[in-house]
Length: 274
Image (cartoon, rainbow, N blue to C red; front, side):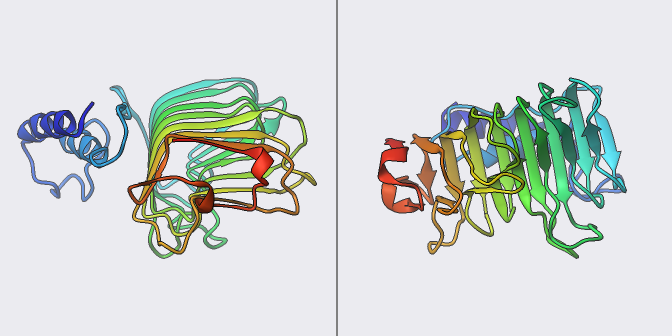
């Protein structure tokens, strides 16, 4: 959709609203409301995107202020759809099990609001903590909490085979990140996304339990808006990096991403497509 089409679609949604933005039922419009649908459309305006994140469809599963992870998949492959997690003390969504457990699970039309605000261990909670291989996330949107704690990772990946497609992430410390847990080769792909107001590097690659980050990372059609000009679009830990990075049709604060906006990736391991 063009910017004009997005605005027209948003106006149609907002014309259907019958209550105020804030009312006796909510202070922030929840999924499934015309307010939320309209605002999600407006959030796409100004990028290079021709895609829109599909909102959760009714019946929506809503999880408010969970003590543990809002959704935790660890006993076999599952499909999770149309789920919203509001607040809470832990990750909004979590998969576990490495190459088994929740590996191969699929999540579609999911949201996380005010992620990480009530963590009991500081500013270290993620919208989606991907601790299993071959996970797919489609049509996802999330906002990081701003107090008393802040959300850390947006789509935070530990294993290869991950696909994140059509997503919006607002206010996260590291919106797209890898902290590798193994050295099994594979691809991590983030495509068709919009990142707003990142508090640190929008795309960051490193290791956690493995010695090297060996994955082939593809970042495609991702627009970053509201980042500090001092930041890079992508950075890696050169001491652990042993993979490759392809950046295709991405923008950083309105400008096409160039090699100068990438830190730590050897020239022979970096591909940029304008």
